[in-house]
Amino acid sequence: MLEPLLQAAGLDPKEAQVYEQILRNGQESPATLLKTIPIKRGDLYNVLRRLDEKKLIYTLPKTKKLTYGALAPDTIEQSIKSQERVIKDVKEQISLLYSFYNLGVGKPGVRFAQGIEGIKEIFNDTLNAKTEIVGYADIDGWLTHLETYAVWYARERRRRKIRERVIIPDTPRAKEYITSYNKSMTEIKFVPHQKFQFSLELNVYDNKVAYVTFREPFISILIEDQAIADTQRAIFELNWKN
Image (tube, rainbow, N blue to C red; front, top):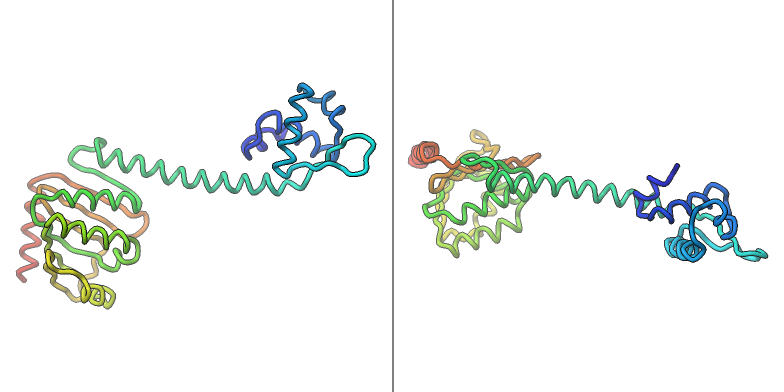
């Protein structure tokens, strides 16, 4: 039976029955279909009209009685492929749902997110900072995966007057970007990228520490703990002074 496949492609049960019958036999008349499928005459003609509109059947020319033939199932194949894309997108959205849950109420004290949207949620939280943000930045990661968001984020942080001090590896891409960066609310120090290759971004603010990786699968962790934040801030100050 092909009905489950055909219904997965978007046909309703009656459409699936009629199309399968025509497909199996090559051609069918409405009279024959009425004998083999439990369907009312009026419903059958409505189904045949819809199948014709979906480019699944056609009317045979020059026949004494109305007869329908089945067209190649290209439309079914394309519909299935579309469904596969939708399922993939839905899976990504489900992952995002769990990320939002973890960021919100799922894990008090430690919040976890995955994916690019999860990274944005973490950085959106830093825009509520009551204290200066200090940390280590992966500029190459920002420019590769979040360049448009980075422009908005920097502008929004300046608008909210949230100061930041940050240590950045001096990659060519980072140095070029910083030359045109508005540093009115930002202090920057470079370190040799050959010696210090940051694989993540770390932000410390208020009583929170945010870790973000700009590599698949894009993991973000937000820890809300005063002792951890104070310790990370002290380590940063040590590195900043040196």
